[in-house]
Length: 258
Length: 254
Image (cartoon, rainbow over all chains, first blue to last red; front, side, top):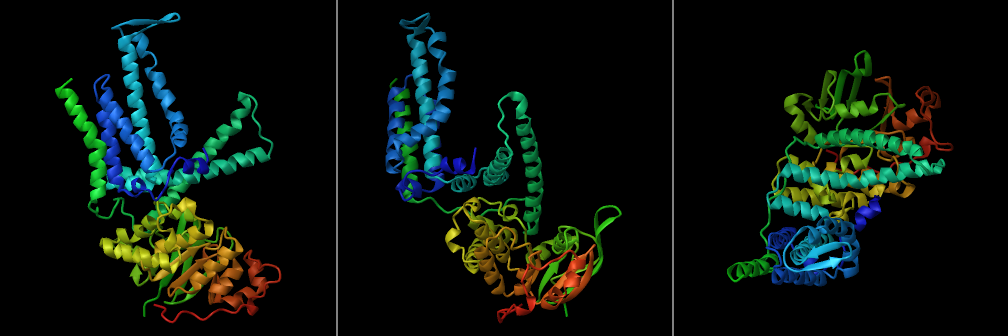
């Protein structure tokens, strides 16, 4: 992972779009709410899942985030999730049965797989849209304003900040190895990589000490302090209402009229 | 009259029997710009860390009118700004504005005062446009300027810089010099960059083995080739300290 790759996983689409300009709290609440409602829905609640997917597609369109980019980013996460659900059609029983070579899939199993796949896709897309429309500092600030534990937010912020520094150091160390002809071809030659990891750990530890000294020099007392929170605007509230409210309404209707 | 720094018999060692500062006597008056020179291991950075109580040695030390004690540390850190050698050590927040606001926030100031100080400090280093950017997106010169802004936002009386010109290209070095020359603060500059010290500071102190080996006008000390050689210092070939013209100081120095 390089610093460039870390940056490339961040903001995408049109930074001036209405979605990008929303308060981070609204995006966190709206997208998390939508994901939660979708993830906790009963099996085969297709109208609800379709509504969630349509809302996410509308958000992506409004933010002008290209579908191709979302697909490229989803490829990193989605196959792993789908792999975990792949056995469902063959392990669940109920309804019609379909022969797929030596294996037999059940209708109930296929339905469970379809539901799991749809929920995974909705959760992944929500996370990707949040990452594409909200910078990490803004998302952390939003979490802090939503009263997430300040120390956790401070740790997450410092981790993100120094991921780029460490990525830069890894890049320079790999360059230094390659410049001296290091091209590992089998496992025994990977020892240099292990030594690189050790050196990186020691450097990171030394840097952590220097960072702490620099924090203390500017009056750090161990308690993270942050500014007060501004109120949400109407557009922010409307976004949360649309993203979480509409799926919630369908969910309630499905519960009342299954 | 109080001094910006007054050290008497200051001693400190990282290991017993191995003193990095060895009975150091050192005084800086308000408004002075002093270059602290010396070979590696002379105690320059150790002295710097003593100035706002990050290290505590034996002997007497008074900085910005305050004795360095447990009960004065918070006030001391508001009055003494340290700028570290590697800006990546100092810029630990996720955005430039948050980082500059870190010190004022620790001072317990209200939000509007923090915002005012952040704006003013970024304007002083001409980095207003970078307020929302992440530190890793800045060049080394820009990071150095933001690191200085983070300290200026605390409105310190004394600014201590550790190797400020390290890793800067000539243009960024020139910009930094212009910036520091325009600051109306007492400056203590720990550096190996002797031309930089000559241009910025009227006075130089050479540390050697934890003691002051020489103290005097910067151009005079740096013109003494024998003195420099004795302390492993060397001017760049062709550089003549006597020909350096220093620009006038800002009017309001403390």
